[in-house]
Length: 226
Image 1 (cartoon, rainbow, N blue to C red):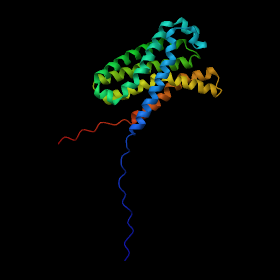
Image 2: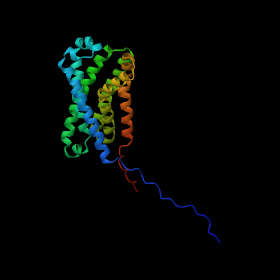
Image 3: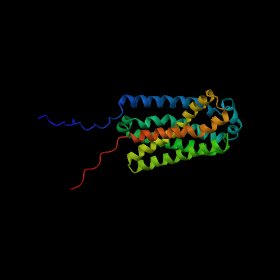
């Protein structure tokens, strides 16, 4: 008698492997180079030289030099400090330095967020772009405050998630300067491009941040008692 057909037994699928270290390192270097390029480009505004200002915003910047210096100075410092906060070796081997740079980052965020809130109502293409930049400044301040609070509570999982969102919002300074030339090359009129960039420069960053947060390793669950 022929044996009945028995379906092959398949082994349970293994859990997906974490991202390779090489990919994480490449991502870190990409963000860091982008951050330094952005800081180098925007630091020119700290000279308060009208020639370096965007033509359409020159009059506004000259009338609000203090908020501009606060916004640009804080943004340059925050975008430069951010990548180093995500280095595991720095957190593990130099926790004191990690906390110090974290506090400096928070002060820089407070400066750039406050300056941004003061400048946003005077922005171009109102009300669409100014509302977008106001939302950006508010979310930056809120996410950074929540990152600080979770660190104080030793809730490192939430701290890492909120810190990631905070830095994704800071990187809007970089993505804004990518999207505007792209839209210009695509033939989008400046007013339409600027209105769109006032939102896309940070909304897309947050989507990417949420994707990364979803891939963070979770702490092991505590064994059941009894």
